[in-house]
Length: 281
Image 1 (cartoon, rainbow, N blue to C red):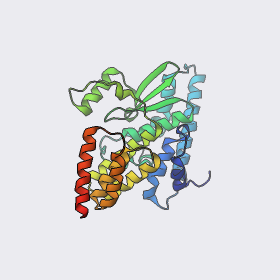
Image 2: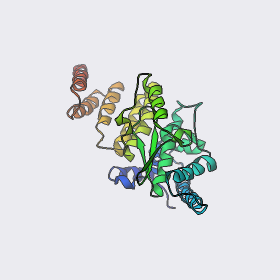
Image 3: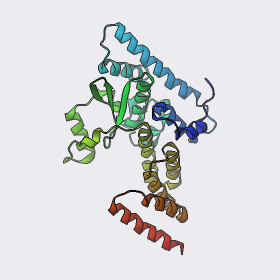
Image 4: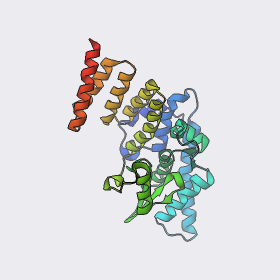
């Protein structure tokens, strides 16, 4: 295996076709900025080894008489990631920033739902299987498919199957007791969307820590992953204002407010822009 160059990988990511993005490799590349000088080959090798192990386990199950269906594919994924490599959801340190950092997740074998979900998705995609993250609020979940068969599973809880009652329970847990399931919760996410969701976890934790400069660095990395994601212009503008870079903040916010956004949001940002411009005088 040649040397993995994270910067070159990220430089090429914006123009990469969706189907060619390996979400786990991309997540390692994104995390690499904080590990200058560290060799990343072992992380990439580990990911690729799991790809092969999932395929081998799937073949073993079929040879033992299992049907080639979503349940068998789920069993192969769970066997490799949970049973062989001991990946698990981190309940005790759930809010720790390292649980959304793919390098730390691989080192520690634990992480947030979206971080573990990325590893499951990577292994499924590498074997040509249908798998996608869903835009479910609060808790990242995966939908596996094969033909007309679909199954929603929880990467944080060993690929536990989630039916309507479990999904309704999750919605109420994160949105409140009055929450009900919405069709929007089942919208599939692109691979870039999944990477942005991972980085959003880091960004929000940095903002809670009032480390606005590092949060801005995260947003800048996210813009490299998804340059057409206009919401990142708003994030960058707000964070630039937080660290006193007012003109740069104005430029970003003017770019965002020129897009098709709800009227009330536009009004709020225009007011913020007015205050920023006044502060320059």
